[in-house]
Amino acid sequence: MKLVPFSPKQMKALCWWGRESPYRDRETLICDGAVRSGKTLCMGISFVCWAFARFSGCSFALCGKTIRSIRRNMVTELLPVLRELGFAVQDSMSQNRITLTHRGRKNTFYLFGGKDEASAALIQGMTLAGVLFDEVALMPRSFVEQALARCSVTGSKFWFNCNPEHPGHWFYREWIEKRRERNALYLHFTMEDNPSLSEETKERYRGLFSGVFYQRFVEGKWVAAQGLVYPFAESLLCDVPEGEFEDWAVSCDYGTVNPASFGLWGLQNGCWYRVGESYYASRVTGEQRTDEEHYKALEQLCGNRPVRRVVVDPSAASFLAVIGRHGRFQTIPAKNDVLNGIRQVSSALKEGRIHICRNCVDTVREFSLYRWKDDLARDAPVKENDHAMDDIRYFVSTLLSNTDSGDPAFFAVSRGEGGALWDS
Image: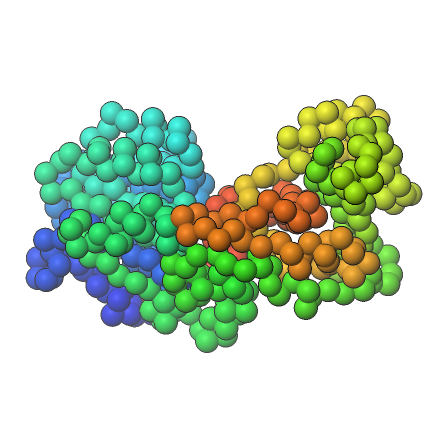
């Protein structure tokens, strides 16, 4: 690991609990801001060092949206740093437990995933001396509050980090806006607070986002989503490329009363092109299609091309059954997390991993109309002109994405270099 000094803000996150710190009596640390701003690693180091400075023989919790994400985002980088600091590490992956020993003291850190309301039950009954939430804005309130209630050991503290979401988010309202009455230290990070990032890397991140995602993930602002969902999309349209395609796939948003949208995708030189579409609106034609008629449209769209995979709206059980009965295509039920899928599509368009061809006229039309709701309480697109938008989202989130949904790290082009070790 290449070592660079920590920035002043990172040092504040590292040392806030120390006996000489003016913030030592605060009960909570909240770090928010831009992606790749260096808040995660320094918070992890600080959390462990605080735990060993104050406790021995106690239990702590490291929480992410999923256990996989907390391992990827924090634990994978943290453990090598702790070993260099002299900690003995016993990582029991099957039990989601990490036991650390240092200078005669021993503490246990349990890993938890807070992906939905049911996750709160996983942490019930524990007694904790502290808890760290990585990307807390992606977790349900019930899970977070259950974990906080487990911190009954005298002297326990709470640690939060996240990238911004909409300003009506419960965490923003209940913790950031009320940080003084919560006795919390609040640190807002930008990419400038991470000295390990080169200017080239920072420029590349700035180029990955637009609109609300740029404001949140680059500028670090808690802002509401407004206007077009993909305001840049029409500037990225292209013609169908010449030459052979290496692979083929189809994405389907199934509809009977609502429109049905099927997209034909071809892979060429590492990029997926939406080269054709089938769009049927029964309210326009006055006639509803049966599942067999939808299947016939799917076959007409594919022609003789060797299409290997068809990603289908997961709620379309009857249509999935019809495709399976014909036996030509492998079907894959689509991932259907709307907001995370929109983020992934935005990233794929900006990075050039997918391209939309101009001959897909209904897709082009929907890009010009697909908008965010005027809603400060939550992010949600208007449920109109969204059928091609949905099938594109299914394609990207199901076939192109290999990361946990909900984690903004899928936007990242690289992890960058690690921070310096802190000599405690």
